[in-house]
Image (cartoon, rainbow, N blue to C red; front, side):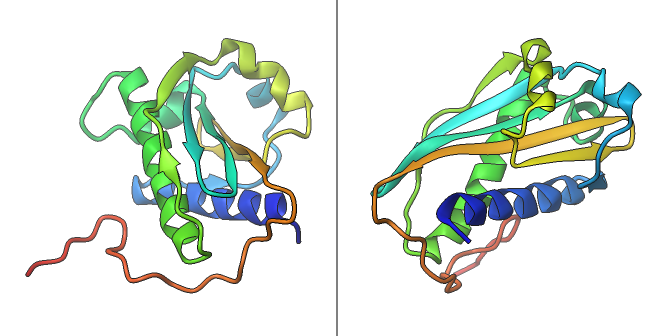
Length: 166
């Protein structure tokens, strides 16, 4: 499996867990035709750099999944940025175990209506069906030539949502 395939799998797995933590079951299955016709409400984009790679993570959702996961009633824009930030944070933690330290930028939100054509392409790492909508995620990444991701070794970090008292 090449670097991009490994990263795509890592992003998709973390996306499933992120939405599950907000009590929304998303499934990696082809959405029904009437759901595909829906437009994305917003997408969150967060850029990143690392020693041997750089790129951006994109998380797009239709309205229903975005609203159902928003526990504090934040604005849609703030919430999609927060979700994309949390997702990259999860990926970042797992990349540490592969010897890659990721530095993230500030996430931004864009209206999603122009992303609809992406559903017709194979550019996305994963397209998930949720009750009442779609979640789409991908990580666009460039790797330096000859760079290979190493085997995962769990780092000594605090798990997502956890705390450590001293």
